[in-house]
Length: 266
Image 1 (cartoon, helix red, strand yellow):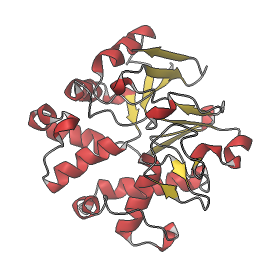
Image 2 (spheres, helix red, strand yellow):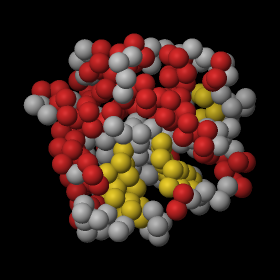
Image 3 (cartoon, one colour):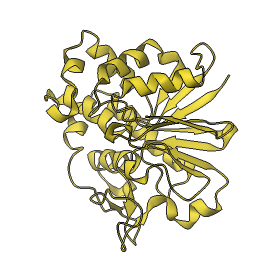
């Protein structure tokens, strides 16, 4: 049995299946961890969802911002943004089944046997892995609940600045989602900056979340996607960026979690 992690698909189905062929992925015994944003912007989100639905026993998705946006649009009865190229997803007779599949997925995963933590955007440097998993479960329970519509309606407001455990339910829902699915840079006080999406070095006042000293000392590996501008470069062996910008013309990247060997294809 092999375990793989793969960067953001974003509807790029052809390179996805080429990577699976490259490693001879066997859905009867191998497992694939997708770091989120499996849909949107690329040419064939529907094919990606079809494949994931058909192989759901062999996959785990740590949901990304685009995946959650799809769930929010469905709950709030909103049409997708045309640039996301999701019209055929919304029109698919399997649409409700895709939504159910995504709702079953977590925000974060810990693999103790590999000393690995996986999420879409990363982990806040002040959160232990156990704390992060507790926060992830808090949100997972709510996007699977009858209150999901009300919580999704507040997901797009400004990021709360108060201590997370002092927030209202809706604010806590939003704050946790922002860390797991939108985080890139942090301010000096460790608050999220959600405006700068550039590569490392594009700001002199902000710090990439993974440059906190906590990660320099950690024996764990942290696997994430989301930040395509990094092009897979973090300059840290235990912090692994798998979104290498396939949807923007870069390669798609996959990693064997056990051996750390990486594979990529345009």
